Structure formats: structure tokens, C-alpha cells
Image (cartoon, rainbow, N blue to C red; front, side):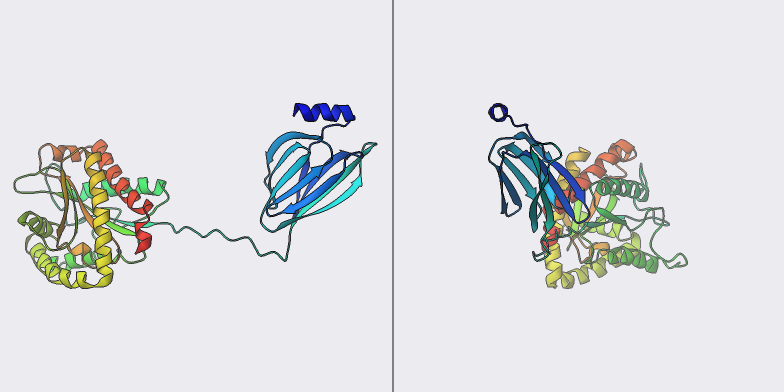
Length: 361
């Protein structure tokens, strides 16, 4: 810069700055130059270079908000215009406003013969289904907390976290109700219709399905666990399936039906692929949930869960703790603990989505 200034002073030339004007359909760049300075315009791909016979340009770089011009950089003898693809320069000279000067004008305009610039592909917005278990006449597990209340509260917290990250969330319920018709009084039909409508939301247009529940046991355990569809390999998983499928005779009947159908479902090629992704999702959610909740990690398991049986997208069921455990049940009653649980579930979901696993289905 000092050398350019000295050289300009020796020649009696003034330093020049480009002037930029944005107009409808074109951008104009103007340089006021001494008559002693010659110019040459070089049109290169996405760059237009103006070379001068003397270093009269002040050193600077400027970003420009223009459809044709992105930025320009001046450095002594050279002006470099960074232009959009397909933009060309038309150069001409006008009389200067001061004696002994002229104006070099470059009009930047898109060449109509040039192919249009490539459009950036739209990134699809992920869609996640959150299913707060039970609701309405079905309280779920009851202990120091009520399952349907905790499940809904945690689901709403997960929803807020995911939406802040740009994920679209669909809730199977957002209040204390189930999904069965209000006038249905038969307990068997009511539970079947409720679970079926939840499962129908896990279709191929969604990226994943997470059903949120609270555990309970005759001898209270402690910790979190995540389930995928499959045959129960231990009595504890079988007991939980009966509980989450409605409990009592209804739960036992639905569990038997799901066991019979699950093998046929998993023989389907699409379901096999979904099962692999479900397992990946389950491990991510389980790892983040156990760490965030600061509670024992009971692992990823499989069980004949009706709500997962016809999922056409990666689907898991999460047990966020034991309602009837004297320590964990009281923790689940606290908003601070529920927030940690929600953050753990959300982190697992976000890592699954960020890895792009869903796009490979």
C-alpha cells in the first residue's frame, strides 16, 4: 500500500476507490481514473479482473449484496470482481467529472445464453413422531407418579428441544386423552384402537417414532431401558410388554397377538431394514438417556409391543424410570429431572438424524 501511494504521488495521480450501484437486472462498477492510466479487462470464470498501468487503487476488500457481484478486492494495479456464475462485464468509458480524468464503467449482467446457476437442493425437514404412552382412562403405571402424566410432560419437553433444532414433531397426543373413539366402552376394542392409531403415525413419511413410558414392577427396579420390536427373551420383558399393551387380560391378549405377528412382520424386507435402524436409534437414545438421567443403564431390549408392530419407520419404546421405586419415583415427580430425561432422549434422536441414517432407508 505504501509503495502504491508513493508511486501514485510521484506520478501525480490520486488513489481511486470503486463505486458500486445495484440496479434492476445489473450491477454497475465505476472507477475514476487519470487520463495517464490505461486499463485492460480480463473476463474469467466467476472473476472479472481489471488491470491498470499504474497502482492507483487503494488496497481494500468489500463484500457486496448484489445478484451479480459478491465481492471485490482492490490492490494497487488490479481490481478483482467476484461475480455470480454466468455474469459477464460490459466495459465502456465516460468523460470524467474532474479535468484530466475519465470514468471506466463496468456493467455486470447475466449472460442470457449461459446456463442458469444450479439450484441448491432443498434439505428435507426431519419429521419425528413422539408418542406419550397411555392417557385418558388408561393411567398406565401408578406409584409415586402417574405414567400418563410423566410421559406427556417429557414428550412436550422433547418436542420443544427438537423444534429448536429445526425438527418437525408430531405428537400422538398433547393432552390427557387416548386415541380411541370417545364412545367406545369395550376395553379390548378401546385399547386396540388406541394403540393402532398411534402405530399408524409411524408411517414411511416420518423419520422415526419414539414412544415414551414409565416402568413399574412388583419388586421395583431402577434405571432406564429402550425397547425395539421382537420376541421377549426374558420374563421381565414379557411382563413389561403386557403392562404397556394395556395390562391385565387386555394386555396379555394383545401381547400374544403381537408375538404371533411379529415374526411375520420381521420377515418383510422393509421391516428388516427398519429393525436395523430401530436398533441403531435405540442404542443412541439409551446411551444419551442413561447419561443425562444419571440413572442405571438397563440396556436395549426387545419385546412384543403392539405400538411398534407395524412401524414403517425406525421405532422404539423408551422406559424413563420406575414409577414405584422410592427414589426414582420421587425423581420423576421433579421438573428438573424430567428435563434431563427429555434432553437425553432428544440428544439420541438428534444424533440419529445428524448421522443421516434415516436418509438411507
